[in-house]
Length: 154
Image 1 (cartoon, rainbow, N blue to C red):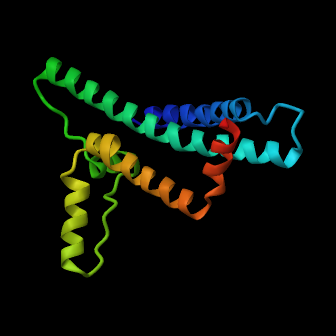
Image 2 (image 1 turned 120 degrees about the horizontal axis):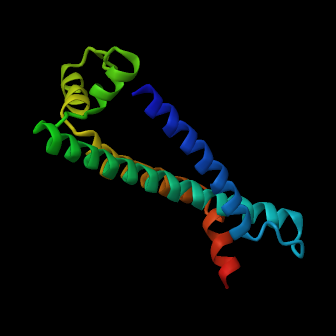
Image 3 (image 1 turned 180 degrees about the vertical axis):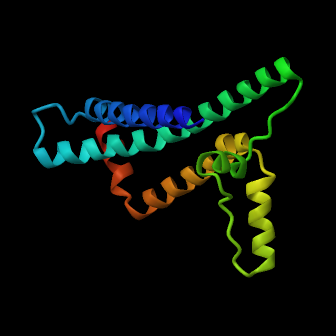
């Protein structure tokens, strides 16, 4: 299990490097006819959109791969392996990640989220929605990110 996590960290690092290269290429930051401030702004805009798309794509892909692995385990052993965040984190750090807050309703809800909601639902639906929400918040706080893209396309 640990080697699987290390492999995913290496893939994520490689994807980050690829995202920077793709952002530099697609943003026009490599062109020399523009002022350097415009090239840096274009590069950061391209990098922003790469940082939006890649995590969502990798999360959905990881969720699909986990479903495929679970299907293979079920076909081979007629047993559907339970994959929740608590199970995965317990495998990684060998202790549950939940700590009590003292508020019984919050404790029950967070325990339910960690113990009952499948990891694939987190990866395919919940994490991408959270990431899209964070992206929309950043875009509302820094509208020049979206404006640089639309101005360049005109």
